[in-house]
Length: 262
Image (tube, rainbow, N blue to C red):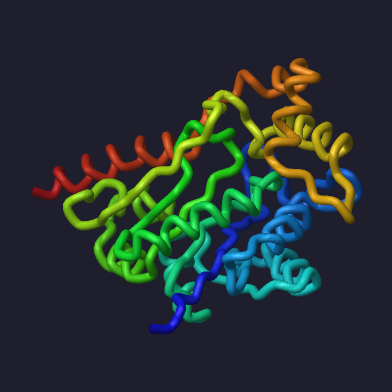
């Protein structure tokens, strides 16, 4: 039996209500997206990496940068992320789709490999991913292409189109999934970049740890924050998963509109 083809798909947009153009903001002399790609290339379980952005003119620069930095690209729907993922995965013949978000420049290739290895070992699961015991910003989920395709065909709610995983998570009767936990529990730590305070923290981390010839990992960041606990206070006030919570509110509006026509 042939080995499944594992493709990491990085979702990226220039548009952001809280921090426009965040993925090309710089830390330690490089754009955040460059750091993410550099780190993701260290993962041993990936057969390919694709940057999936929108067809909007403002996102053309991301296609150019991704090609410059040596990865493949795809341009699709601006709002329907599930459609963008499905079409990108189909174009690049993915059997396993690894979801990565461009606002997570501290992504850890060892964690990516752990997630993919667990997915491949289980064999018949729809999804395996990190849970909220991980620092926010290491989010990694491996999906079967078959599950992505089924979700793409059947998902209707805004939250299920604007994000990749909710339809699969919302239907355990259809999909087998597994969450991987992190020790020590570190879900209170925020390493993703959505706001100016997030960017400030990430810049401090890269400024202290980044060396192009010697990539640092999650353990190094945790040790840094233990030595300098004040760093974690920079963005501690920001709520986790605000974007998804917004989509859930849109779900209620959608359901209300559907009920109005009954």
